Image 1 (spheres, rainbow, N blue to C red):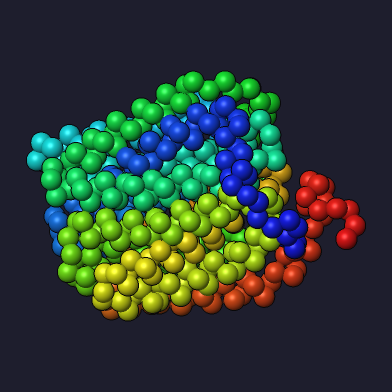
Image 2 (image 1 turned 60 degrees about the vertical axis):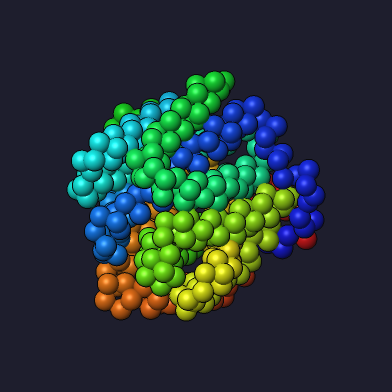
Length: 427
């Protein structure tokens, strides 16, 4: 974590990871699938709120879909270090397709109830708990040039947020016309793209450790390794705080759309798309960078920007202003998350990659369900605006604390950057 040399590159740098065939297959297959995923997410939030009129139950569904990550992600990261990540991903994508198909059938036949949604959200949560750390650690295996890793991570974020832009827009158009069931069906079909892409890959077998009797020991090694590394430990803690108090703002978007902005499903789609525009812009900026150097400062600034954006958004009663502020929120959120991911994946030892990414996912996705539950409960008591103001304020405070620690973190990471050739041996 040192001063950046060279600044941002031109447009030719943005897509350099696509030179790798396997990553190119994954990128386009995953792109189709993610559009379906975001379409389903918006439709599910709208369906829950339409059935219950309860902000608290929105939080409950968010909790159920993400809580398994808090329990499973470290174990899943150990699996990713001990078994074929490629085969694991094929299995998780197939199970996700089954979940979406079941939602579609129940909704289109008119028998859907909240308990169905909760049960299927829990099922998908366990699948994602295995999928996310495996997918994160598999990125390096898809690349023919390891120096493209930071670009691939940024492109993944661009892909995710491009889908975050298109998916809610698609949902906003489909929901008023044919309802939530069609959105779930689109998502089920979209998984075929990424499954076909994974099957078409030519993956070189990697050396796998003997896993007999070592799974729990491997998990302990992963936690000990992350705890000893000051940069990894601090980044993961910051990520956990922001995910706990800031990221659950998306759970409350249906309430803002209907109660504060007096809108409908289309309004919800606009709000989520605005956040996606900001996030996509931030991710493209990261993809254009030549180096990981300087991302530590980006993390501090982006976290503060995200928090301030939430505070200002919470006070808005005008759609145009809310959309503009969500662009800022989306940019700050993705810059913080993707920069944290890039630094951690750059400095982690290869044999610990899956386990550290499991801990990373636990911090990112594992704390979010607790945050969703808290956000829903707080919104029912003190209102959605006050809930977002509180979360935004904590994010700003966390950014200031992180910024104060930057000099020490840079010194701790300098030997790693020198060993990797990112920094010269001497200043």
